[in-house]
Length: 427
Image (cartoon, rainbow, N blue to C red):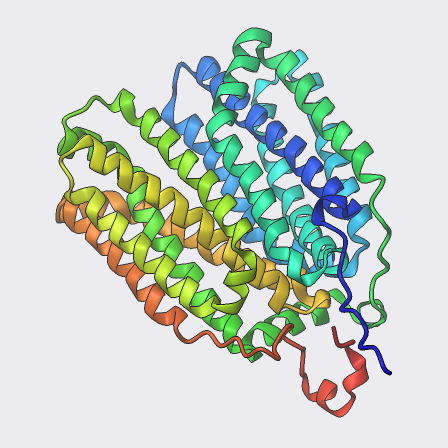
């Protein structure tokens, strides 16, 4: 009598060492990021007498490196050992904070802008490496749960981050805030020493950086799903960018509230993001089976929430819509991040992330720049409807996604690879 073999089961995600280390390091990094953001914001405002130009420079220095270094960082993340990359990134961040402290002690307070630039540049190298670690060391069926949990941690800091950062700065001042920041990065380095080593592939060892960059663009262009996701990313970025600077006008024009009440609506959105992250993590197996439907319905709900938010004149309805926007934004972000890890070959995760991530960021910046002009030339309601229409268009485009059951990873099928399949391993 023959016995059929038992299906192979993986240990629970919480016992996965790589997940434990990456999640805890992310927690420390989120705390460090919020400490940095709040401390530098308040410090620059104190030093410049609330100069809006100086404050806007902080935002510019935070986003500009994404365009310049995102693809470069992703390319090197594919070539380098991910363990060494994340450790080097946090070490460099800690060292740069120490140097900036010395500059400030010498009276050169403008060095705080360098802290923002260095941190933003380093993150373009280290963030793709975290995705590569998940791709290589977390079982595929657990990737959605892993991404959901890490996104949930980020959502918690959307709520708690400003409170913690403000408490640290107001209690300790800028010098000790930077010491706390440096300590958090160094603690993350120590924890990440426990990550397993991963050697670079033989293909990347033989190719040049420029060849890897060119192959990254060809890889995205060859795979329809990635092209569709790129279009969705761009439209969502534009939509979010258009309404993001105008949130305060919802309170003033539609609800008759003072602008100071905006913080409570951000808190409601933060709780929505946390719930969205938990839902995406809990439903990760169902999401994998109904990927296209989940994307389509999620985007439609987001579009409807944006439209109803501007139509409402009742605080409770507006807050509810803000809550649903938070849920769907976090849910969709986790779904898209999971797709990116599952659909992209391990050798291309960094470059693909480096190509697609700036599309959403660029959309946000372009939308934010156009928001004021749109509102002044039309109306607040029309501007929000335009944003909702862009999200609805993204929903329609998402129907072009194709996830056959046999397709687990987008295999790189270059002309050379089609003739020589062993050039890139199958996963």
